Image (cartoon, rainbow, N blue to C red; front, side, top):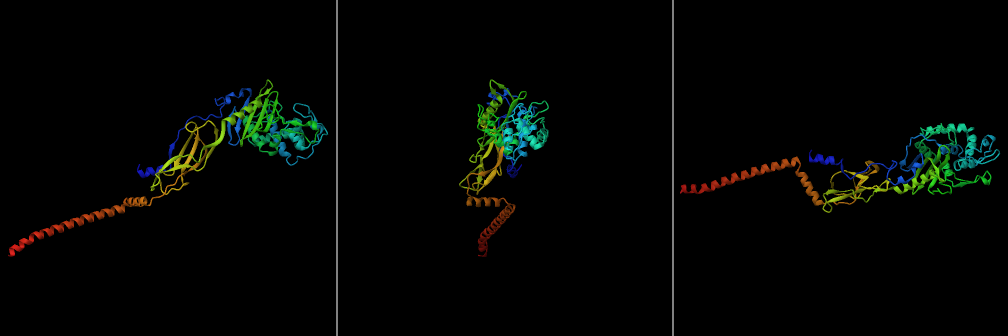
Length: 445
């Protein structure tokens, strides 16, 4: 390959690959990453995700079928918030049908003839997790609870919850009801996207205006209510338990400008400790302590030096990223271990003038072999002024390499030889004439 071809190819190839090591492993359970101290064995399933990046930091099998338990009320509560949006001040008169069997399981005891507002009943459903409040709104909005359940299954299918089926609107144990961690996460995102649901799910306590003051209650989610599990970063979304399913919590945390979703299913209740809350709190603490969103490559980082021609003042120009490259990664990750970077130059050398900020290539960062962040432009950190003297010399050199110049030079050389030979012949003839002149003169005498 000729030198010119090598230079052309260099415009588009990777110049260098910095050190790279490690294997992706932040989402696997049981690693020695600090999370092994969390009592995960006390729950049937667990999951924590950075919502902003979509990265699942740790989870058990996301597709294992689970009883949905209290997560059912995320779906029923979401649909009721949508159904009654803009009607919060309307009064609902509790009918005999609404009040029937209202002392079963998780109920506040709504009685026939009471007149709560829609707002009251929504708070009782979403914040308080009371079954009779859900039933009352289901009848008021859908005619029957069964119609609400049908809408719940339709919505689950519509948003991609392919492994979920509902038999009731409360989450009470039923062998034909099931879901998965993956589907709960989809539902949580849908519910959190409804401003009314999210607001009500995050209230610490509420006193229904349309009912007796004795009906004041705290949020059923102990991460939000005043309790030993309270976490001020938790802003929702749902909690509860059933005899067969165990303790569940779907917790949305907002901290340091980032959002996290933690889900704990089928947790134990041992020694007066509900491990759904214990595990959720420890998962979020682990995530906050172990991961961060940070500049993995800064604008001030020097990536390489590029040789410069046509300049007396500078022999090289420094190349730096045009802007910082950010990514959400473990705090312990560093270059030379899990992180690496590659860069591509537009040219292996530069010709002056070069201005600060001129594009000279591109840089990409990898984490355990996978690209993270954006590929950004490389720009010149320093400038290089052009030398006019070197420019003239270079032009002369370039001109001398041209074919017509070589032909002219050959012709000039040939003419020079002809001229020199001619001069030599003339000089030789003149010398002979000088030597012959005395002889001719002697003969005449």
